Image 1 (spheres, rainbow, N blue to C red):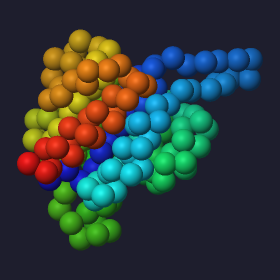
Image 2 (image 1 turned 180 degrees about the horizontal axis):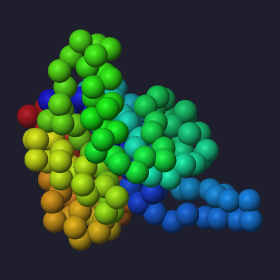
Image 3 (image 1 turned 120 degrees about the horizontal axis):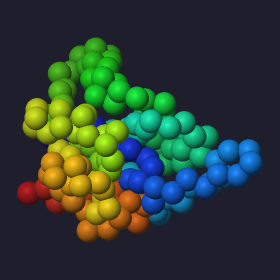
Length: 166
């Protein structure tokens, strides 16, 4: 049973492009269908959406606020360790025993590879956009038919919804 839905941001929830001006990051583009899946479908499945990204962005904070995502972890270089820390904290706080088997993770690049391999090794679910790097695509349980930022996360959510319904 999936309880946590971890998502990378750049290249997964966005097209991977970073628009920069003289004062830093200007904007990112998000797909409305991804947002609908995160905000309206995951809660009905009792799945907690979690953002975990190596970058730091006020834009990501704003998007998470808009979608009701309260679990946001930015500037994370060791995603595997952070995921285990999140599971441990949740388990202690709620007297549960969730493991990596209860994790779904959507990522697209090498920074996601190590934690995705660990999640898969312990029976969790890993997915990626169609334009993910070849190393990620090689190990993914599910590869979206669309690129990051174009509804790939929503497609993964719909797949999980179908799977959970049998």
